[in-house]
Length: 367
Image (cartoon, rainbow, N blue to C red; front, side):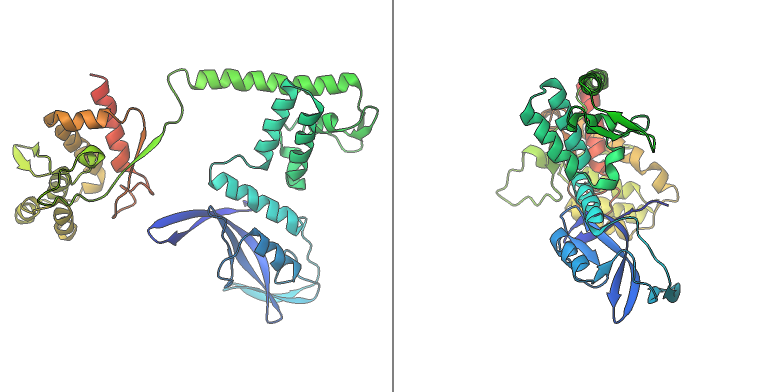
């Protein structure tokens, strides 16, 4: 069983991802096993605390509100499951190690290097330029890695963190080897082997990066497409707004014209001709969606909706060259579609609205 599992919470219209693990909260003389969650915005939540940060979590451990192991002979409650008394309970972690783990989780949730990656990067820098200042950065970052994670820092079960400790030790110093009960004496040759370990790793990373990007960059800038078009009598909507499904650009499907992709999508989602006419007759795309959501759905709609949406987008951009030029003008940017409704389509979910735009853009560029 993993020591942490994904979670999330809603903040306004956004979903904030998080990670949760278990902890004991001291409440009215009992120790209650409860989830302890940390989120990408740094918020930490447990039981009914209402939310704090990592410093607040540290204070809760310090004042006894939270613990990793209740004292002997303490009443323990597992909500909805069991209750009893602890006779001997021991944690192999300290509160600071847990806080260090959670700080790393916040970094990973935000696609930032965690403490292990920051140390790794410093090691590669030192291997390329082994001066004292760079070694001190390695030392600082190594000790910033939670202690119980350091042996896994390099992701090398044959070496563990021995190459790092070799570089940080003084010449002639004896340090623990990988295998229990064995030691290594740090010599100039041992330090050179450790440096070579990271130099070879750096070259392997460079080679891997070159191969990974042989057909183009791995990432791209992100652009956002908004949700609704509300054209007024004097408005002249242009730019990225033209990429939206409810932008008034005629599309044709099976010989029938629709005012926008949104109109056509929701009309085609039902087999009922009366509902289809009502949807097609809506003045704006958001009105077509509202009507369509109440219409009876085709039995196979979940299986075909992506194909229908893709076909409608292809027709839209084939039929309107100026709009196609706007789409092509986004280059290779990731398109995130900020919209309401199903997370299947939304940018904070599967983002299929944005992904289909990227697909059609690539097809246009390939012509």
